[in-house]
Image 1 (spheres, rainbow, N blue to C red):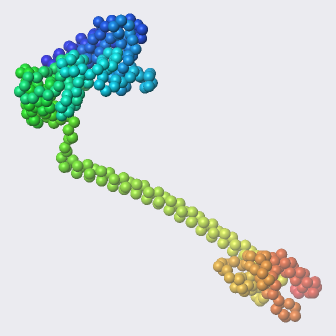
Image 2 (image 1 turned 30 degrees about the vertical axis):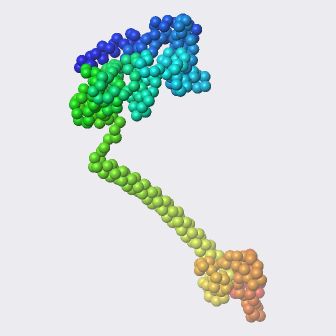
Image 3 (image 1 turned 90 degrees about the vertical axis):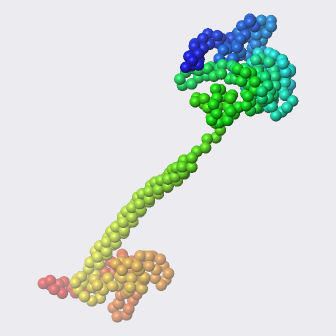
Length: 389
């Protein structure tokens, strides 16, 4: 509660000191107005982000950069950015000019471990320092103090933010070796605690994570181990989802296949009905043609010129032509012995001398022959008195 209250009070005061410079290149400035913003410890001057305040009191264009992509240069091409310092040099916070690496004991800027000379022992290099060197209390030193020896500690309060508002996050650093921490009260190096041990700060735990119940927990970047039943449930869910997807697709495709099959069945039923209608029309036309009188004989008569004989003559069986339709009275496109492909009616007739004659006649020729025969017989018989021949 005390820390939370202090954080809210500090957050109310800090914005008053957080002033950003807006003087562009060539404008007047004062180095006395240079300061670190409390809470974030960002360097602020009278000049804007592309210039620094020189000793002559004029905002001058920056000559180096400490970041690959510096702040405030979004409208500048990468090739036009200030240069990066070579190995053995560093660019200070003011970014005025590249300077040589500082030796142990030299003054350095806050959290600028890269300004200090690297330690000769490469095993000292960790993520908490720069090649074994560390800047504590604005002084370069190596992080090589062992257990029980005197150490230096630096506690910096930063303003952090959460869903509940602002709070203070104190970062404590010391010059003890890896696996040790510098106790702020005794100023000596003490071994870090393992998981489950009591603690008062993150630096006291080997994992670097002191929980709210003041015990050391797992590292915040440690992989989380899940129970076996969780993997089983996930596997069942995945397999069930796959089966459900396959089943759904099968049902949809089966429905589509049924619809297509019904459409095809309906099409073939319509085609069959159409074919049946065509056959009935052909039979009707055949019956109409065969009902015409032939050589003056009545349809009910018998003999050579009777309808039954005529139907037999017109059938494909007497004509010697194979046909798959027994109802067809005429042979279409049936060739005769001469090899011609014209359509006609093959018929057998008896001449007056009793000899058999076979010829191919068209429908027009057949009708003409019938008319001539009827007229000739009428002329031979003469007028019929009383309605009898």
